[in-house]
Amino acid sequence: MARPRTSGNGPQGLPGISVTGRRAGTFCLLLIAALCVQATRVQVFEARELDHNTANQRPVIERYARPRGNILVGADTVTGSAPTGGRYDYKRTYADGPLYAAVTGYSSQAYGNTQLEGTEDELLTGTDPRLADFALRDAVARKQNPGGDVHTTLDRAAQEAAMRGLGGQQGAVAAIEPATGRILALASTPSYDPGSFAGSSGADQAAWNRLQADPDQPMLNRALRQTYPPGSTFKVVTAAAALSAGVVTDVDAPTTAPYPYVLPGMTTPLVNDTTACDRPGLSLDAAMVHSCNSVLGHLGVRTGLAGMAATAADFGFNDARLDMPVRPARSNFDTRMDQAQLALSSIGQFDTAATPLVMAMVAAGVANNGTVMRPQLVDRLTRSDGTVVRQLKPAVYRRAVSPEVAGQLQRLMTDVVEKGTGGSARIAGAVVGGKTGTAQHGVDNSGTPYAWFVSWAKPAGSDAVPPVAVAVVVADSAATDVTGGALAAPIARSVMRAVLGR
Image (cartoon, rainbow, N blue to C red; front, side, top):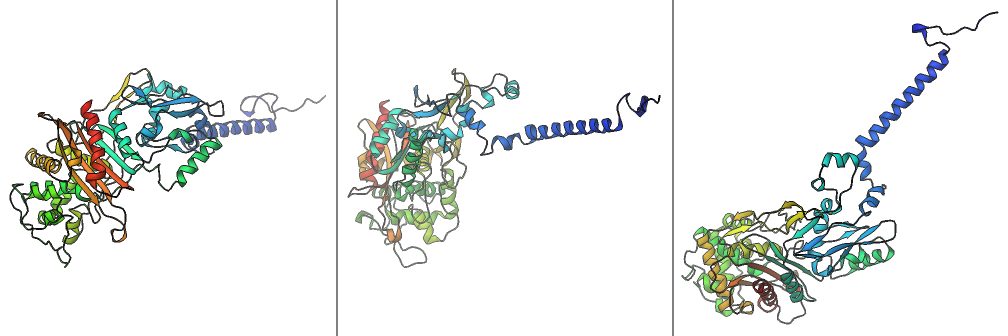
């Protein structure tokens, strides 16, 4: 009887396995290898791309599976998390949402994150590696740590005073502690409630749509993201540049400013808002007290474009990366223009534009004897148990002017409040320095002027650096007297009083 043929032993194959079987086995091994390669490609090389794919809902579900860390003002928690009972376990809540919206921004399941909710998102969600005791182990295990907390530099009394002063007007306030750069108040009106669209329901979408359609733009952060012509408040920068360049050496001595002052290369005179300015040779002190366009425009041209641009930059203009950690809009002072345009720019018109934050830096730099500190909105970052992850420290931004020039500017600003257009900012028992501004805008200056005031204050008799510097802009008001002295100065006074009263 014939025996069935086999493949034999040794190198020819295994007993009992046919050529077809060997081929099938090889094919299976290749399939397993291909699956391993594909799994490696998906899980390692494409993991980040898939994690951020908009169709992948897993990261979103994980993000809202636990409470978010909080943002604090002093000892007060101004944010929270609430269970939803829906697909996403928790959503963001806000205590006094409109009061702090310009600082916190929003965290929405449908619309993302802004302001501190955005810049500190990893810490707040617990994905920041600094929150882990063993970062590598936690990363491998995909362990989610509790969200950390963001402690701001805000002063609640100053913030409340700013919002109360602005009321229903379109405007903004930025207040800084000059010696440290700590932001004490950051207000924008009209404001909004970030909790009204924190979820993903139909009601949240409706609230978002209403805010987007509102012509008053309540979600526009006017303190950080909107620039305005600063008008005569910019004359503080022009005076600083002229004094630093030696164009003016004595603030009480007559200047070379003619009257009328005709713009260079043109036949148009630079007009003033008061007849007190309508004479030649006014001193710098008198020109600041009465806010004389002709004198400050002339001094800007005498100083020159290079000197003016350099001084403006030292106060924060033309810096597109002024992170704090939120990034504000870039304040502008042109570095290419003719002399007529330079004269207009020197009084805060033409293309000169500033955020309230940068104008607060101008006042703070003068108050801090010429040193501008980097603005700082976050004091420290902590784990949920209070352990400090990062403690932020004051940092010098620029030395804008010498202490001697700063002293002269302090005298000029004090005289504006005591003898000039800034009288509405006076505070009993305090020394206040300030500068008003009323900036024209629109076609043929047809728009309602922007009312500005920049200032600083300290207790009378104190030799210390003033504890507060403020910038206020009122962008749209129904008032009949739309001037910096009438509208903006009283708001600045209330904010400064709140800090001095602390």
